[in-house]
Length: 247
Image (cartoon, rainbow, N blue to C red; front, side):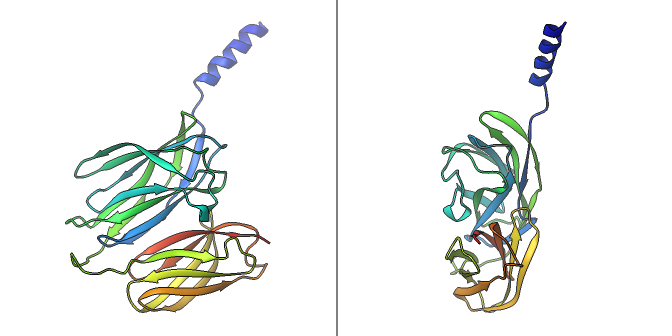
C-alpha cells in the first residue's frame, strides 16, 4: 500500500505544472529609427541554472540587435548566444541561451538591445513568451511592452537617448549618472525597485543636447541596500539602467 502511494506521488509530480517565473518589461518605450535602447528584463527565477529565453517582437518597428548580460546589473549570466531566429513581416521570434549559469532571484535577468528600423509601421510589441531553466519549461508571468516608433529623417544625425552608466556603482549615498539626450529639455529621473516600485524622483532636471551628468544623492531613509533600476524619461524615449546600493 505504501509503495503504491509512493509510485502515485511520483507519477503526479511528473505531470505537475511547470514552475512559474515572473518577468517584467517597461509598459511602453519610444524609439526612433537607428536608435538603440537597452531594455532591462527584470524577473524572479526559482533558482539558478542554465537560462534559455524566447523573445517575440514586431520587426517593422524595431529589431532585437542583441541580448546582453551586463556587469552594471550584477548578473550571474553575463553572456548570451542566439540559437534560433524566425522573422516575417508582422512578427519575429528569437531564441537566446545564457551560457554561464543563469540569473539570480529578484534581479535583472538580462537586457535586450532594441534598435528602431525604417518602415511605415509605428506601433509594435516586445515580450518574453517562453523561458526554460536547465531545459525545463517555466510558466511565464509577464507583461507585453508596447513599442512606439517616432519619426526621424533618414540619414540625419540622431543623438541617442541613453544612460551610459553611473559611478560609483555600487554606491552608498551619492552616484553620478551619465546620460545623453537628443535635444535641450527638462527630463525626469526615477529610481525604482527591481519589481517596479517608485522610490525616488528627480523632476525637471535640465539637460542639454548630447552627453550630460547628474549627481543623485540619497538619504538612508530613501533606499536601502539592494539593486534598483534608474528610469530616464525624455520627450523622445524612456530608457533604463541598473544600479546597486551598498550601505
